[in-house]
Length: 388
Image 1: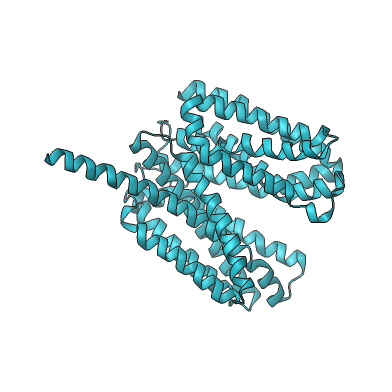
Image 2 (image 1 turned 90 degrees about the horizontal axis):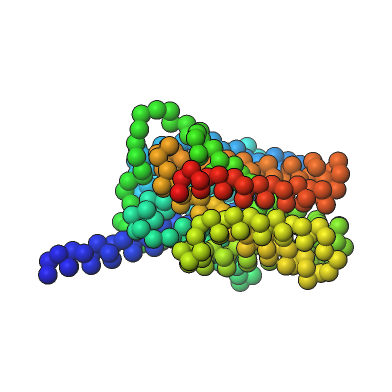
C-alpha cells in the first residue's frame, strides 16, 4: 500500500515537472511577444532612424550569443530551477525598464541584457526539457516547443488587446511581467533542480563529434525560419505581386503549420519514428520552397508555406531530444552549443538571403533555401546511423 502511494506520488510529481517545463517554454514565447510592441515605442521616444534602430536591435542577438555558450555550464553548476527563475525574473524586469528608457545608451544596455536573458532562458529550458523527457521515457519535446509558439500567440494578442483598451505600454508590460512572475511562482518548486552532468573542462560549449552535425541541422532550421519571417512578405509583394495588405499571409500560414505540427509532433514521432518525421519533413519543406518558386497559382503559394512549416516544425525538437541519448558531450553543453549555432542561423539567414537576392533574385535565394533544407535530410540520415 505504501509503495503504491509513493509510486502515485512520483508519477504526479513527474507530470508537474513536465507542465513546469512547458510553462517555461510559454514564458520564452510570451516574453518575446511582449518585447515586439516595445520596438516602435523605443523608436518613437528616442527619435531613431531606421539604421540606428537596426543597430540597436542587433544588441538582442549580441546579448544572446554572449550567454548561450555558457548557459549549459550554468545549468550544470546551479541547476535549471535557479537559472530559469533568476533569468525569468530578470527578463520581466528588463522589459518593464525598457518602457521607461529615454536615452540611447541606456536602451542599448538594456537590450543587450534582454538578449542575454533571452539566450539563457532558451538554452536552459531546452536542457530542462531534454532531462524531463529522458526521465519520463516518453516523447515530449515537440509539445514543449509548441508552448513557445502558444506563448508568442497569446502574448501578441493580449498585449494588443491591452493597448486597444487604453492601457499605456508601461501598464501593459507591468501586467505581462506579472504574468511571467506568476508562472514562475506557480511552477518554481516543480522545476528540476539539476541541470545535467558536470564535467571538468571549458565553460564555453562548442560542438564536437556527432553534435557538430546536429548543430548544422539546427543552423539550417533557424536560418529557414528567419528567412521566411523576414523575406516571405517581400517575396509575395514584389515577386508574386500580392497586395501589401497580404504581405504577412505567408509567415502566418508557416507559423500556423508549425504550431499544428508541434502540437501533434510527439504523437507523429511515436507512430512513425524520428527518421520518417525529420527526413520526410526536410523533403516536404524543400518541396514547399520549390512550389513557391514554380507555382503559377495563388493557392499553391499558400500550400508551399504550409509544407515548409509542417516539414520544418519537428526538426529542432526531435534532434534536441536525440541529444539526451548521445554520450559525446554532457547534455547541458550539447544543448548550449547547438542552440548557439541555431541562433547564428536565425541572425545570419535574413542577411544571407538579402545578399544573394541582391546579386541574383529572390528566386535564386529561395532555391538555395530548398537545397539547404534538403541537405538536412542527408545530414539527419547520417546522424541516425551513428546515434540510433
